[in-house]
Length: 88
Image 1 (cartoon, rainbow, N blue to C red):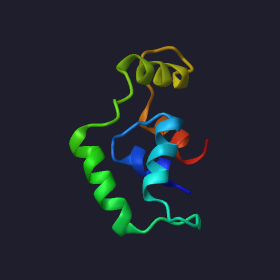
Image 2: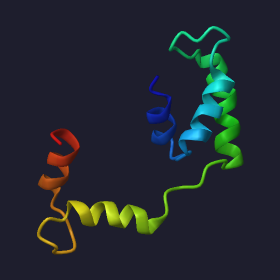
Image 3: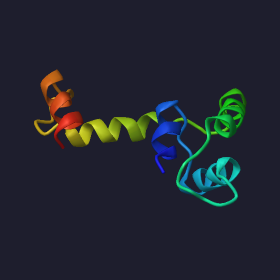
Image 4: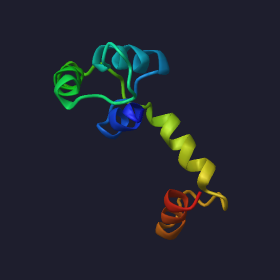
C-alpha cells in the first residue's frame, strides 16, 4: 500500500481521491495489498506521458522549506536537511 510514495517519487502529486482512482485501476479484483508490475507499468506510463497530475506549486514547496528554517535566515543547511530527512 505504498503506491502514493511510489507515484510521488516519480514526480506526480495526485490528490487522495486521484490516488484511490489510480489504485482501483491497478489493483487486483480481490485486493491483496500488492500490485503486480504488469498492471502498474502501463497505467503509470500513461499517467506520466499525459502529465495527468499537476506538480506541487512553487509557493507550497517554498512554504514547506520556510517551516524548516528555524532561524529565519532564508536557507537550511545540509546538516539540517539530512537531519530532517533521516531523523524527523
